Length: 154
Image (cartoon, rainbow, N blue to C red):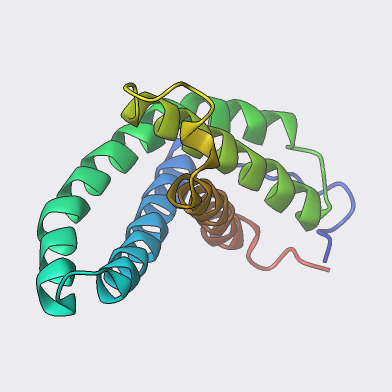
């Protein structure tokens, strides 16, 4: 899908906030599903594992991901400004997904300081976090972009 020729992706601060909130909520939803799945497949009794992961893990994830979204916001704003005249939706999705993956990678590295830096990235959980961050960033952009470009699609 493309937007009209000459159409501008006129993101403003309000749209950036909408996209940030949407990305954060998508990431929290993905993480909740991930934590429940991990709890159900753990060696301990599933009900105890799910309860522990959700009660203790989710608040930590909410704070860490919220801070990550705030720290990534300037980069998202800059990327949005650079893509202002790009009409191909796929390029926007890929660019924001890549930014989300980068933010997820940085968050994993910051949250696992006791491990050697790049071995932390090779764990299955880290790869899931990075992938979920990429999907969340692209979804946040899509939600905000739909509101910005409503009625101007080709």
